[in-house]
Image (cartoon, rainbow, N blue to C red; front, side, top):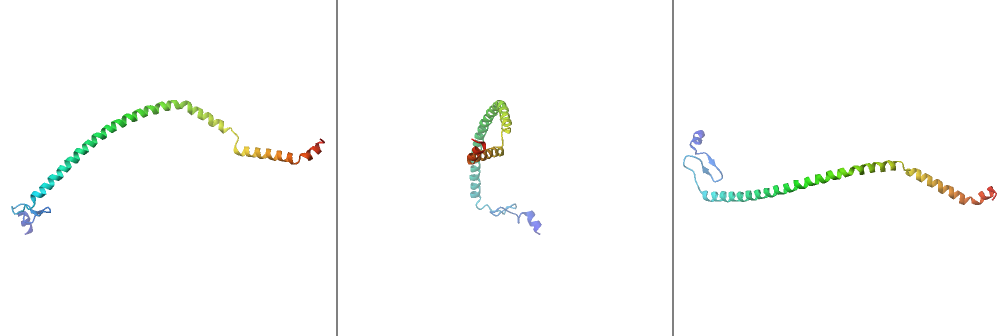
Length: 134
């Protein structure tokens, strides 16, 4: 029985307004207000779409400017890289020279030995003079 009613459209309800589909027994209560709301929404969507188009055009200009600047920066980087060749050689030479410098351990040991030797000479100076016969 319900299949027959659905075929005639008596059971079909579409949307929150309760409009019945088919059969001519539907209502159009508040239809004007709903259409007006939909038209207002469409106008808002149109204005937002126009604003989006404007923003997109601005972004295209900004992207073109950025692309141009990056191209110039890449050329500058290439120039710097070509000038860095001699600097790399000089750094390698300095690293080799630093590798041949005395280590901290050697410097501390040599300084400690010299301080101990000078201290013993000052401390035992008189006895050393007597031993040497001076």
